[in-house]
View 1: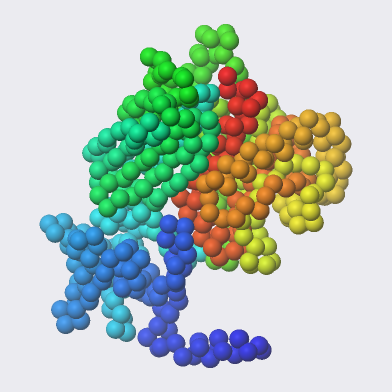
View 2: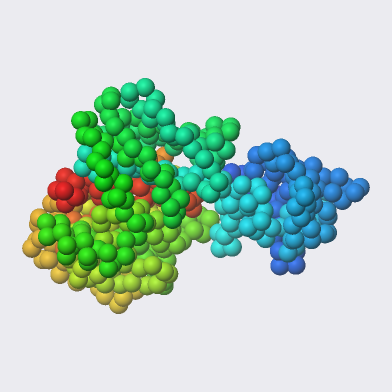
Length: 505
Ligand SMILES: [Zn+2]
């Protein structure tokens, strides 16, 4: 037994008896950042969390009054009252029903998770909370009423969209000759953002949460550029079109706004009536693993297959919002899909681009960051080769021999050298755009013989979003905000590649 193990077992026996049933801690991830674990207590099928810590995490305070049995939660100047062992809470004139009551144990007060994650409490607090039973993690994110801001680059024009909750007002103002600003009084955003767009029209945009408003500043590439703002519904959003130097917005500028998810029939009509219209390019988005193949598992138990699915759904959403691609997912639920079926989906649709999403894992828990892989016969380094081997391991679950499949695919790859050559520049665009948007380190663009990429007759890349085996990366992967920014990066890379190929003329 090692020294550490001895110390740990000694510490175990020192745990107070009152926590014999509770005692466990719950991991907390706040807007993608891992915080100190929080003491918990289990009783009657309910999980309880230390109320004082909840107060701190939410940026408020909790006071408890042992004599009267009252617990008071103060948040942004408002107060909610609980009574020990009572299934009611009150805030001003409002009263809330709890499934389980607040409790006191060993001179600590606890609040039930079922209440923290209830719609009523989320609305009152302004924070969304979700408890993951599998990973024993409480995910807390600020409930935004404005945003996200998304940027879409088109030829000579950049469109920024800002979702707005009902009841919010806004102002759009010029900031000198080189920028414009949107101000949303009383708006709340998920968090501050700063993105370098650098598409020749918009150089960057910044989202800032001020105490009583949200400010979005859009910086132009050149001075004197024109812009137009319009409000659209379903979802309610403000659309700002910024025009490249010398371009004057046409009267039809607003009509081209694509529906969030264009109906298939509409697409068919567009193609039929406009003879010169280009084919709508097909992007296949592949959520790695699924079903009986969980992929890698994080230190807190996060499964790669769950992260890749939510990330793929988000990427599909962002790409569809652009309005100029047809987007197909290889899976939309927790099902097992053989690797060859994934490439077959792409090939049957004559896909133009293929993007596979994965999470990296390493025995060394210090490894962190994202990587973008393009297909190749030779791996760029031994780590890349080992990674491809582990991602190809799903073949064994399909009852196939990886080596035999490998030989078949090398022949196939040689017949489509062009696709292999095109994958590297595609990967480079995606890598650069992700790097602009997320905080985890950029480990660069690499090559390896991923089976799922080799079988696809289109430029194909595989994105290892972050290390699920690294505590901070794992927390990021669990954050909606991180996945949103990553998806926006991939989508911007896809659009940039498509623009360079002349697909979006
Ligand atoms: Zn994977």
